[in-house]
Length: 365
Length: 168
Image (cartoon, rainbow over all chains, first blue to last red):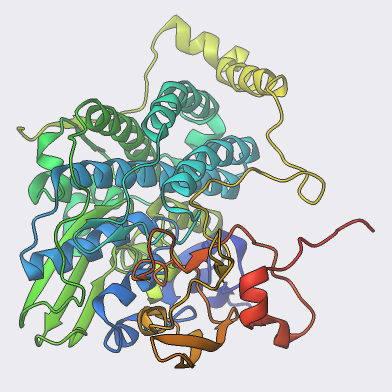
């Protein structure tokens, strides 16, 4: 007479905690999650196809719009891929400035993640503080390239312009205030018992599963796998810098939080080193006016704040790519979501989505 | 550089300190102290229409055309390079031969701001020296009621629009 049955509930695409237009179909047994099916494609713009009809220089503004929270990492990866294809050598000064920009972008992206993740879990204060500091980084980017979100900061072969006068001092000023601000976030969250209750043991991703699902970035390192593209396949002179790769032990939401917090500290270290030995010289290699890479194919990866961001270009020797493929970390990391959510409660889904830090522009492309 | 890793772990306390923490809610007081400190920091909010942030010199706003600073002539030589590199096809140029024979001059130069993505790629190849004919201006207030207003003709591109007045 009385019976219970499983129920499907839609979460999103207009749910504020899904960080964009992600739709999740939750299969529930009471409050408990039996299965999660992510439905993606709401932000699909066909960037890969669009790229086939644009010259190489025109594609860079498109890469800004893939992972719009960390556009500079995309610029760096795309320019690096084309440079690899053409066999260009980027001047050392440009490489170091690129590293500074990419690491500032990593901090800015992690600050946005921290603010929204904490906001989702009910810690509203952190959101205001992190956005205040993120604003300082966006100001630095505005001074460097003139935009605050879609930077288009690099050019194939280096950078468009050298840093503006006084810019390095402003970066140093940011580095001098940031560690104390980060301590404040940690005071608010790291030992807070509500935060611990919401994150510890939630969304556990085992080491084997993390590797099997192809995750990368902090999602993978939170599970204790030592894989960072900056170390394993150094690009843009990352091999000259001294930094640690933070690793988690349990692979839960709290470990991924700790990994990202430590990454911000390591980014500060890298920027400090890059500023201290910033080489002099040109910022752009000699590049032909019309960029026509030789026929061939190339795959280039960079460590974006979200993970392994890959660019695969097939060239037939014309001024437009024959095929373009973006390997976006958010898309792959999203695969791990159903596995992490199984057996947890609905409220934990919000924490888990926040902890894998997806950007829907990157998932759908 | 050798591969270096660092394991992150939750800070642990043991013994009497742990008991004290449990009962006195120490970490919550630490958090409240942080928020209290921040109450006395200066405000960083800018009350936008009344006050404006200072833009950096490289800020990329609406693309515009430039006059020669001394002679007052149009700098653009109608080479169509910006039209070629624009990733959004938002620039449309019509040019004609100059009556005295040498070079070309502009008949019309339109930028469709509905399509423009403010990437600044049009400025890079501009051949006029030392100032580029097309430049990214510092105008960023683009809201309007009609779509026609977004296709900026030559006159607007050269002279710009007056900053909008937001007084009631």
